[in-house]
Length: 152
Image 1 (spheres, one colour):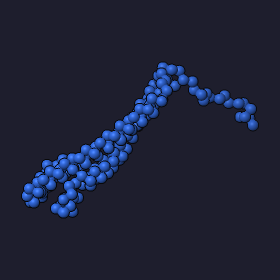
Image 2: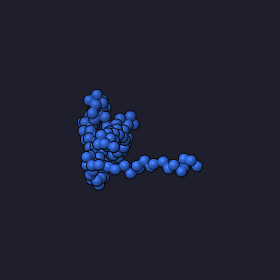
Image 3: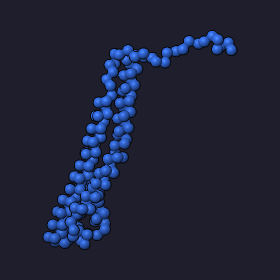
Image 4: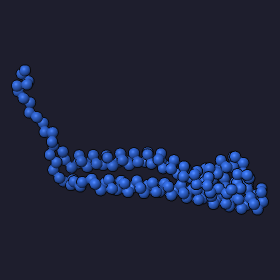
């Protein structure tokens, strides 16, 4: 077996690991983001919001995309503006609660990613280094056929 065989096998393993990581990462990191966002939002929303806002508005706030969409933000601001200056203050507090919750969710995702990278680094550092030019003996050398077994 030559160097080319081991090089091809190692490249195949690398690309397999990358593909597996891109498939698994969103499935793991998405729920971490959403769970952390929802828990933080429950605790950071203004106290007066539940008396003022209807169920649809509260449900709309549970989607972090409301902060990223100018149309959704304008609709939310219009809903709050109907209550006058109290509504405007409540709107600012609500937007700040969404930002804080999104920040907490992203912090959780990055923390999990950092821990995963640290564990991966520690595991990779335990793999022994083997030179690609090193001669490797095949431990399963072909056995010569025994003439006595073939006759009997």
